[in-house]
Structures are given as C-alpha cells and as structure tokens.
Image (tube, rainbow, N blue to C red; front, side, top):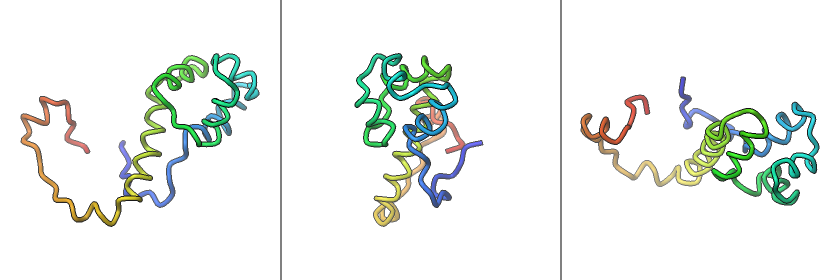
Amino acid sequence: MPFAREALLVAPPHPGWILRDRVLPGLGLSVSQAARELRIARQTLHRVLAAKAAISPEMATRLARLSGTTPGFWLERQQQHDLWHAEQALSGLLGLIPTHTLPAALQAEIGLSHDR
C-alpha cells in the first residue's frame, strides 16, 4: 500500500544509511570489502554511506547485484528521500500552484495509475 509522503513527519532514510546500518552488516561486509566487490573507490562508497551522494541508476544496479535485491529497491528509497526533502523545501509554494486533472484516457495512455 503506498504511503502518503505528506503524512511523514520524519524524512525517509537516505539509502546510504540503509546500506551502512543494515545491509553491509547483514552481509558481513566491511566498507573496504564492499567497495572492492562493487568495483568502486572506497571514497565513492563513503559518500553514499554518509548521504553525501545519491544512488544513481548505475550504483543501484551495482548494489542490487551485491545484495541480491533489485535496482528499483535502491532507486525507490532514493526517490522517497529526495521527494520528501523537495516537498519540505517547496511547502509554502505548493499551495499556490493549482491542480489540474488529466482526462482518464490520457492517464491510461501515459501509464499513470489512479492511486497517486
């Protein structure tokens, strides 16, 4: 069931924190070992773990392979995190933007589900 982002009072965690606090320990991997296995520089991984770098599609693909998850898992976590912060930053402005509804046929044509 999708969650309502506006109902969240706390930001969804950055996927780097999930990787750092849950996934790497769960796999028994050190940061150095994970970086080697991901074929990236340790500093690149440190930037992700510290939430200083976003999960890119390329990184999501690498992490999925390493952890037995999917690239979508990592990208969805990044998107949730980014959207929450964008909505907070724009909260005063969003109320000033009118909402228009696309016709149902157009929604179906572009693949928009009805449960936004």
